Image (tube, rainbow, N blue to C red; front, side, top):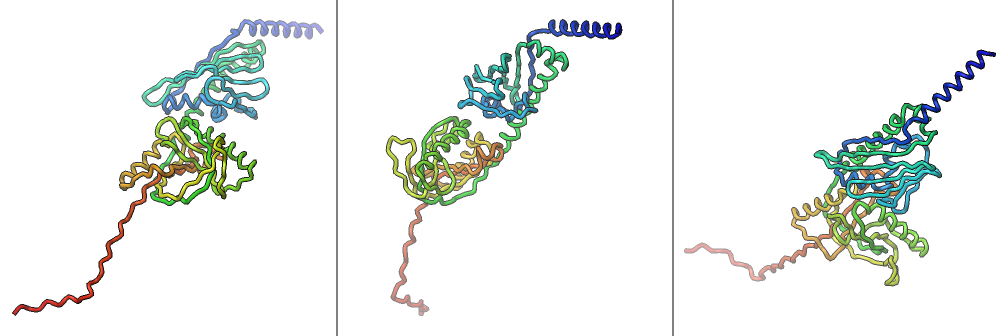
Length: 355
């Protein structure tokens, strides 16, 4: 009986010592990790700054089967991603080379600081996470060798995933100019918009959803896959374009309607195929125009510049597998008819020898 009392007392003393030890642990923490990423700092910043990419690289909840929900605007300040019922990460600051995000789980708040520095070979990404530890979290931390032992690897693995994605997905592309083709006459409906080139996948997806609703509500019969008409060459950062859906019959709409019925006649074009991310669109246009110059063709600027997104979001999420067809209109060469030479009806006498 005495032994049991001694063991109980010993256990209580141990428990008390453990509680005191946990209570005296720092109530705050700060962890910083860094990695060289083989991609320009602007690209890395834009990728991390967009929560639609979050689940492609984050390793904070890799073992959990959560469904992630993002804000309507997934980029920059006031954007967020949330999962579970009590967890959210929201961006409070995003500018050029820095991002600040609040990571809130129940009543616990942590802060993520991202810093992107240009290097000779790419970008040095630095991530610092700061936060407070509740008593329960202190216990978990002590039992698992300190918070750095499990949060640190999560950050490191996330940085590796970012690097792998940007190198493998964005860096893997192919451009081929397939030469002259004839595009047939087409009746279609269109909705115009403009955006940054990098935002085109999400913006065009939203437009296409709107148009599909319009088509369904008006019982419109479609023909073929959706396409885009470019109102400027997407060589810079901005795109002016119209999302289009080919239809069977001509559609009449009111002038104030955002969706308009249009058509174009058949035209000659140089076809170029880009396999890969839209960030390579500028290179695709340049390669197509080099082909036009080499073959002494002339662009028909009064005709239609169009693109067909054969493989893209939402069906295919990997940019390296996206496939885009670009058509640059060409002026048809006018062939002058050869002048018909009629045969002389009078036979030409044969030459006679001179005596």
